[in-house]
Length: 109
Ligand code: 2BA
Image (tube, rainbow, N blue to C red; front, side, top):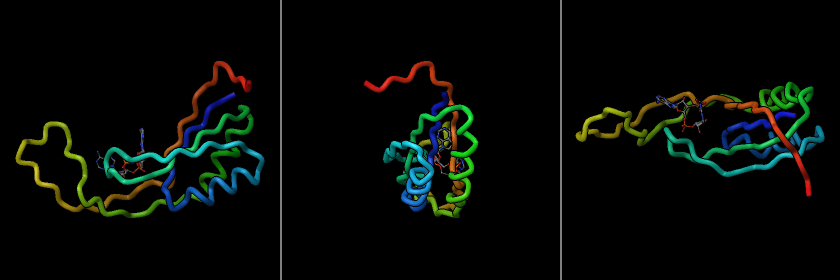
């Protein structure tokens, strides 16, 4: 079994959850915040059998699209001096960031 963590954009979250559930996956949705843009995004958690990981990734990929976003106040990088002045910059936010982790144990009580 694997734990899939998928960080997706809020705009895609509703559709991707619906698509995953239509295919029979259980999914937990958590409101999260990106460290760089400090904007809301959505983290999805799924526990799936190893042979279903590809299907989950395919669904996420089919729904989630990259977009350009303006970072009005990006987080200063380490080493930035104290005179740091925030400035707007355009970044491409990916369709999704996906982690696949091994699951040692899975119990429903
Ligand atoms: P944020 O941290 O808010 O990052 C949003 C977008 O800003 C990133 O899109 C990337 O295009 C850009 N970005 C991030 N850090 C940057 C930097 N130091 N310099 C310049 N541009 C930078 P994505 O890479 O598609 O990431 C979207 C969101 O996924 C991230 O939101 C974060 O919440 C999550 N994420 C991405 N990679 C991650 C990782 N390795 N571990 C944990 N979360 C991650």
